[in-house]
Length: 285
Image (cartoon, rainbow, N blue to C red):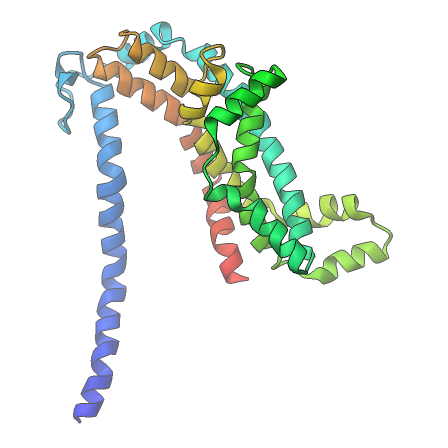
C-alpha cells in the first residue's frame, strides 16, 4: 500500500500544478506587463501637476486628448514617424529576404564547411557590433547620417537573428517538395519563391515582429549613425527630452511613449496567430 501511495502522490502533485499553472502564468503576466502598461496610460492621461510624481493612481481629471494634441504639435511626431518608417521598412524587408535565402541554403547543405559557415552566420546574435568601427566605416563610404547607412547597419545586426529562426524551420520542410519541383523543371529561384517562401510565412511573421520591435525602439545605434540628421521616433523623444521640452512633463513623455507603441501593438494584435504559430511550429513538426 505504501508503494501505491508513493506512486499516486506525484500524480496528484502534477495534477495540482497543472491546474495552478495557468493561474500563476496570468498573475505573472499581469504583474510584469499589466502594471507598467497601466502606469504609462494613467500618467499619459494626467495633468502636469498630477504627473510630477508618476504613480498607479488614475487621474482625477482625464486630459488624454489634450496631451495627445500637445505632443503631436510640439513633438514633431509626423516627421519622426516618417523617419522611422523610412528606416524600418527597407531594413526589415531586406533582412527577411536575404536571411531566408541564406537560411534555405544553409539548411539544405551538409558538411563541416557549411556547419562552420552557419556558426559564423548566427554569431551576430551573441557578438555585439563595434559601434565606433561602424561609424568610421560609414564616414569613409559617405553614408554616415543617411537612411541608407542606417538601413545597412540594421541589416547587418539582425541578419543573424533571421538566419537562426528560419534555418531550423526549413529543416522541417520535406525535401521531397523541392525535388518534385525540380523534376518539373523549376530552377532554384522558382523553388524558393513558389515552394519554400509560402511555407515560411509563420516563422517570418515572428521574425518580422521581433526585428520591427528592435528597430522601432532603437535609439543607441540611431544616435551614433544618424547623428541628428534624420529623426526617428525614439531618437526624437530623446532629443526633445534632452532639450528641456518635456522637462518635468511626465504626462507628455508617457503620451509620446503611448503614440510610439501603438503601431507595433496594432501589428502584433493583427498578426498574433501567425506569431504564435511561428514560435511553436518548429517544435510541433
